[in-house]
Length: 223
Image 1 (tube, helix red, strand yellow):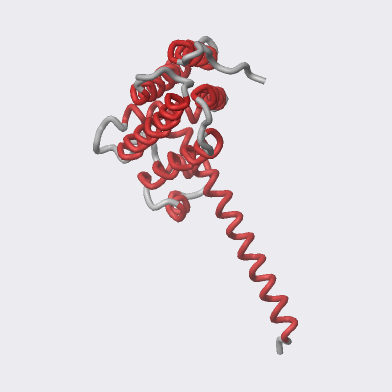
Image 2 (cartoon, helix red, strand yellow):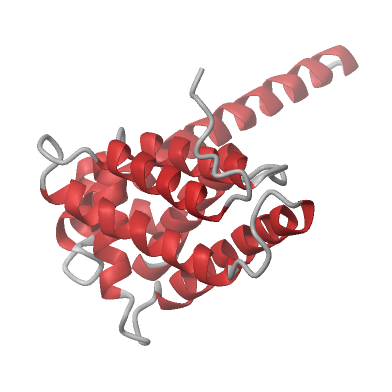
């Protein structure tokens, strides 16, 4: 006969085992996402294989599909995870000034310069997603729309506060900045040791701010 105390202990043990199982599952899920980044970066979406990704993680393809319903689902989860991490780290608050906005974009550029695999993946998938039938197409359309919207709102407040000149086309500035960042990333991925993406973006942002701020000021000095 199992006593009440034994039942409680068994319950605790069961819950502990459950938590351990979840922890293993979470850890395996993250390993799959990390492996997928490398595969999508090297081969793109269409040429990547779930079987090869699973092999790199040390599981079967069936085991991978236990965590992700399909290759399309895995791709979306990879993109959403990286986007969430970037949003929390660099866009978690409203920017008080345009200079603060561009300083945060510079920090994002520095962060990307330390993540060759992730940045290569982004370039490859963004190019592939020009096809409306690509599973990442809706993600990239939404991503650019949201980036331009967030930047435009920040820059518009800077016009209203008098930091930026009246008549500044904030939407065009935001679109141009996104294009410059992506163009610099492409050149850096092609030549990571020879092309200084961070310095090039710093110079661009400083030059842009000096041309549109009422006081002719650029990026703030880094501490």
